[in-house]
Length: 322
Image (cartoon, rainbow, N blue to C red; front, side, top):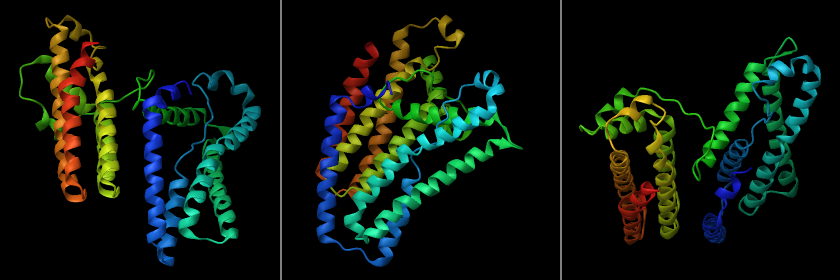
């Protein structure tokens, strides 16, 4: 919860209000001009039902030490897990009710179905939680390791979301050799540029973040019909990405040998700047190509080019000086 104030700051809250207002206007116009067939309504119900089951995971709040100190209280702890399962249904309940409320004008379902639909979804969600609870037991004995790993994965997924907006402590990342990406490594004798490029391509944190936000930008360009809204959303996603990729500067600080290199810190900042400029250039190329295909008012694509240029030319340089 302590990271929420960094997520919902003044600028992001204002942007969110504008975005929601624009989406509400588009939705109202769509309702006035379109009527769904029975088959389309069934498809929308299935899609919304699947989306409603995604948010909200079984939150146990267990820690690694609990399997030692709470082992003797395992019977009482099972009662706590039942209570935790009920509390974990609060967030899905809000999401389900919100989706049903928003989609009710579009679907035009009878009142009975509008009441039955969220109840059925919550029962399915509760069933999934109960199945997970049962999977943590074998012959009535809790598998503490499995339960702790599930809670760690839940926390990491939340921290990764907050990492889009601010630096998050305790977020672990894993590196994997991706030999098929070696051709992207720069042919350079600059030590930091080569090392940090490898870190970017191997780390699931940096490369994964780039691909996820690029995917969101692609979806915005393809599916948002309002050209201004699509371009603004793409620019915000690009700014968020650059803000987080600045942390690449500290990616190899934990390695002892990097501290004894006869290199200045300025060379590391310059390496980060060159890497991020290449990333921004790649993003710009993909976004402009898709924009030319899907955006109606193509003149707005110049805003993407302009914002990305400002990020590459001024923002990165100023951030690296701090």
